[in-house]
Image (cartoon, rainbow, N blue to C red; front, side):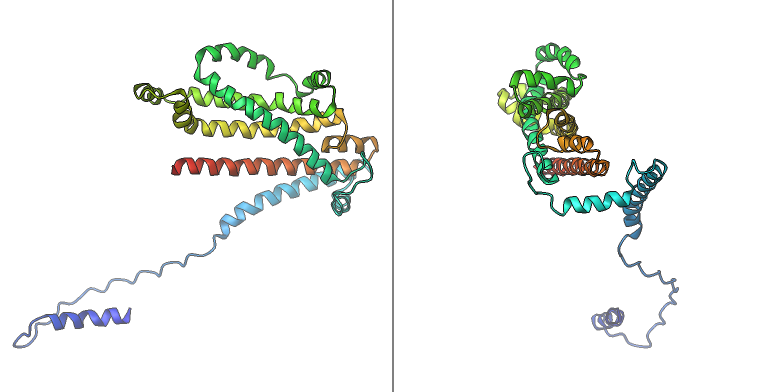
Amino acid sequence: MVSAVFHAPLDAAVAAPAATGPAPAAPARRTEPAEPPARASGFDWSALAMAVVPPVLGLALLVGLWYLVSVSTGSSIPTPLDTWKQAVAIFSDPFYRNGPNDQGVGWNVLMSLQRVAMGFGLAALVGIPAGFAIGRFDFLSRMFNPLISLLRPVSPLAWLPIGLLVFKGANPAAIWTIFICSIWPMVINTAVGVQRVPQDYMNVARVLNLSEWKIVTKILFPAVLPYMLTGVRLAVGTAWLVIVAAEMLTGGVGIGFWVWDEWNNLNVTNIIVAIFVIGIVGLLLEHALIQLATAFTFEEVKS
């Protein structure tokens, strides 16, 4: 700042021709009020507070209500502190094995996730192409819409006996139940996305005489991607809900069977721990899919 102020008149004096006689008086310059210094950019504490305080207050409200219920019901519902101590004991060794029906919570969660991955993967392999076909061709849309409207509201547990009858095993029956219940969000959202593609896009494809494969990959897929990813998110949430109920009835290793087994042992504390485990795993699955959807959408916009 100092060098800039003093060098400017010096440079002007050097560049100006020498003048004879007394130099004219310089006009008086009005002094402008100095602008306040710019506020240094720092950490946004208000944004951090809005991101942290409301969730903490919500959790505190949950714990407070939980404590009041546990106190009012005597010893039937464990207190938050008792549940925390039990959770620490459970997760101190989550992968122990003491026989086929006595395994740590880690093995139960992994087995449930394996069933969810298989049923969800099969549903994606069938549901997404079916959604493209139903949305692309009006004949198929009119043909399958009544069937989807009829089968979609059926309760997940109603499909479990059919799976036991057909597959003669608890594990494939649970996978079948996940498949049949998680396929509908992917079919419906993908078909709706295809049907909402602007007609101008299809007219251009017709003028260019594009093949059906290029229409699907170059026009339909980029436009349908947000709808499809929304269906995938809904489907994985449904799959995680269904597996807990299915494992309660089929038995074996799994988080649903673990909840039912602890109920038979009248261990309510472990049941509450399992509820939190189910919720946290579901939250992580949804968060992972949100990140995946954001990444795919961002890459699509860049391309």
